[in-house]
Image 1 (cartoon, one colour):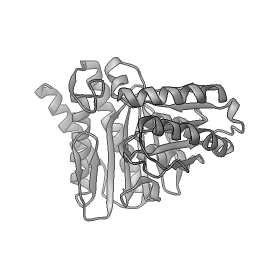
Image 2 (cartoon, rainbow, N blue to C red; image 1 turned 180 degrees about the horizontal axis):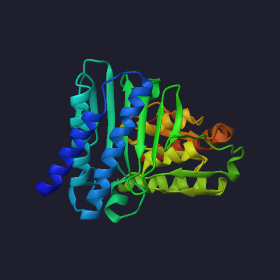
Image 3 (cartoon, helix red, strand yellow; image 1 turned 60 degrees about the horizontal axis):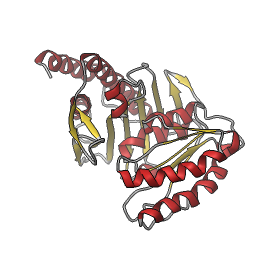
Amino acid sequence: MTSEREATMDGQAVTAMDGMTAAGGPPELRALAADLARRASRLVADERQAGVSVAATKSSLVDVVTAVDQASEAFIRAALAELRPDDGFIGEESGSSAGASGLTWVVDPIDGTVNFLYGIPAYAVSIAVMSGSDPFDGGLLAGAVANPATGEIWSASRGGGAFLDGRPVRASAAGELSLALVGTGFSYLPERRRAQGAMTAELLPRVRDLRRIGAAALDLCAVATGRLDGYVERWLNPWDYAAGVLIAEEAGAAVSATEPAADGSRLVTAAAPGIAAELADVVAPLDAAVLARLGVAGETSN
């Protein structure tokens, strides 16, 4: 990256720190998460126009990291270190650090990096803050998800509702699984993808249709706004879903995760209340078959 781009990022970081305070209730944390997501989103959008290249790979050759992923996370982490130095941090690209406050920020600087790489307008900056160590233990306090390609920003705080661009959102009123539009996603590892493909083939005839958007954060926000009626996926990381889980929950969706399987993975499910139980009943044996095919022991009850 050029020194000119680095200077622009530094300027954004200073602006963010000057414009926000370190107040601590869920509404204030939501405002901070949304502000940082918006600023990081602008950084990502600007850098996308300047061109993108792969900086590294992770779990497989198709699981890529770009320099913009790294720059986005560096910006968010630096801003939080300035504003909330006592908080912990978990980031997809730069790892984790413990804090003294009992709060931890969970950050995905670009969820949907392959979409970003190809110029498909479905990728997101995801920022959440939680108490405790598990997003599914009720400790999520606030979160925000921003789509740099569209400018949309979803946000939520615990007990404060969910919003898209400042307007309240609600999950759909879907009441029948056969008429529901359901999202899902796939692992980067070939054997897992093969097993997930078999699960998809069984699920597809039981719903209106399936969508594979390629960004878990946006899938969960889609459930929150009724753009999807349901969503299921295994082999996610906390930064993929932390903000989206809270946004979906605060929008009235039923959100759950299985107990960790032997490999540590969990099946994450989010759905309109009217189809949540039916979706869980259908997916549980299909997910069990996926784990069995891979030789992984797991608990699949929600």
